[in-house]
Each structure stands twice: as C-alpha cells, then as structure tokens.
Length: 259
Image 1 (tube, rainbow, N blue to C red):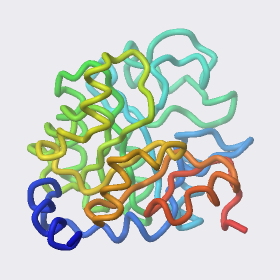
Image 2: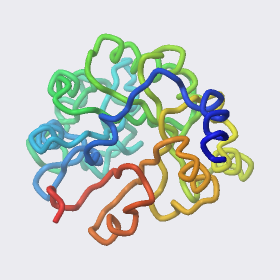
Image 3: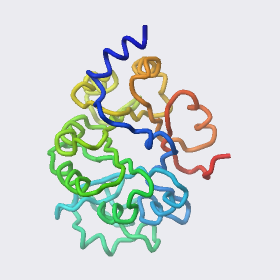
C-alpha cells in the first residue's frame, strides 16, 4: 500500500517537525511581484507582494565585504547596466546602482527582512556554484535573528546540508530541473534521482514546471511524500498546465489575483 510505503520512507527522507502549510497556501511571487515599472528583486517588488498577500521568492549572493545581497544574476549588467560580477561589489558600491534605471537600488537581505517583517513568507534561494559555506553561514546568521517564516532552497545539495546544521529550525527545499547547464552528467543523474534526499532532508521539492512528469516526481506525488513546487510559471496557459500536478507555483508575468 502507498500509505505504508510513505510511512516507511518519510522518516528517512523528510525532516520531521516542520509544518509548511504557510508555504503551500498562497502563490509565490518570483523575485517579488515585479512589473514593467517595478524591477525584480527590489524593495518595491517585495512590498507589492506583501500588499497582495503573496509569498516572496528571492535570490541571494555574497558580497566581498561579507554582506548578503538580494540579486539573481552573477553579473550586474542586465539589471544595472554596469559590467562586472555581483560578488566583486561591496555594500557601499551597490548604493549608487539603480535597478533598470528606476529609483530602486540593489537591496541587502537585511533590508528585505526589515521590510517584510513576516507579513508574508519568504522563499530564499541560495545562489552559488562553488560551495564554500561562507554564504550559507552569512544567510543563517541573519535568519537566526529573524522570527518570520522563511524557507531556504537551492540547487546545490551541499548548501542545504550546511543550512540544516546552521539553521535547523528553517525548512529546506531542493531545486531540480529537467536539464542543467555546465554540470557533469553524473551530477545531473544524482540530482534527478534524488539519491541525496536522506542527507538534505528537505520539506519540499521545487522543480521546473515543464518536466513535472519526471518518474521520480510522479512517485513522490503518488506517495504524497513531499510537496512539489513548480517553477517558473509565466503565463495563464502554464498555470493551467500544472494544475493538479504540483502543490504550489512560483510565478511571474501574470496578473494577480488570477482570472
């Protein structure tokens, strides 16, 4: 019986003690609720998500002065028009950079936490390709003094294993995809067979919406073992496509409330 198998597997794979109904009860705004006039990952996009009652997904990197910045890309150019890597900046340098020629600056994570104040949950993605633990330490240090609802997610299992130790009270989500750029075939196989779940002990899986029929995910759905978040929904047709095949969505470029 699936229920018996779930009862056996769940303690081996899923971290006990977490209730994440708050993560599944409302759609998640990808990089905040951004529009043609509100840049992604800006304080304005996060404020708009709070006003709409939407959970917030955001991305973090480490600056060279040790501060945690909320920014998606590795390089600055797309969002600021300035060439260079985000990791080469310090917090003082970022104060003069504007997002997409708006009045919005590149925010630090601590600014976002001060703004949100648990009005809505935060889904925090750790962006790193070369795991060292430094970014994870800085993130966990900030979150350990924040009383609001936050979950930590990453494509890198090592980041999540690290956060399991440093912020054990925060649920974790492992991100996976149908394809990965620039990683070895065996690593892709490890990720999409979910063999590292017993070490990560996630509370959910976030997967690319186009490939929700991956065999591993079908098994998890049938066993009701782990909630599945679909990313990134960018149209009403995308949203209709995933209905009934996931437990929540991360979305952008769709007017909310949905029609």
